[in-house]
Image (tube, rainbow, N blue to C red; front, side, top):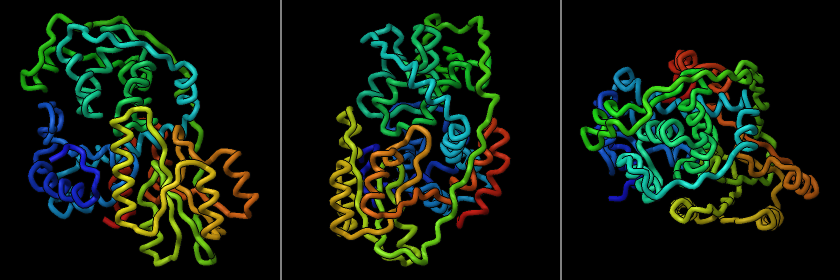
Length: 377
């Protein structure tokens, strides 16, 4: 069975099996990288990133087979992605600085560090790395090999199935000691040996001690998250919805409210063939299960679809920092020209969580019980 199915039915089957067989011991086993197929972790990140499956769907399945209190660590992991997105919403200049200093640094084919070389090949072959190995990899990249964290973030961006601008950028900053100032994450050979169950032991190969003193002031300033107005759907006629990599299941909200709509799926090409094929196969599954949906690949095809379907009101997935697709002047001006009203729809999951994500995760996670109570789990 493939590690990353692209059919929703198979994904849900895998998730149910995971919640029954692995989730009861998740907190004990999650930090171990035992190699593919990584049965001890959920591998949901590529799907949550695009909401091919939503956080609520995952938690409903998880709690149907487990007590909520016994899977707190798993629930925290689900909320980490939400936290990173919310934090970047309040610190958007951090992402701009990353883009402005991003630089390519070619990685040697062989570094001689067995674990690092293995993880590089695993990432290139599968589009995935265990989260603990991502931390080790990033630390070795920065502190042992001496590369910039920005070039490492670029390497992940180009090759990860689950690439998320917030999680990726802030995760690399955290390892580098910029997210929690002067607290870099150092990969230790003993730790790697233990949590890979003896698969790797890079003793004497890593830089495990550094003199570090970096001061950054930008984190201290917080831009309050301004929630967009709630959308009233009572008077929406000729409603259209566009799904894209920011939200591939937004239509179900309207389906559950029994609101009539037309829908198209916006497909964007990825430079990495492995990632591109994965994304395309997911879109094909959506189309297969929704015969009336259409795929569009550029703005002009979308405008043709809007005109053909006589759309007057358009719903688009909310675009967080680093995920801009339609929130650009060219696209919005054309919608106005076509006399189409548009709204960027923010899910309640994000609406409730983002205002709490301005500081550290420890403070954010105190709100998780209340955030769960606000959704129908």
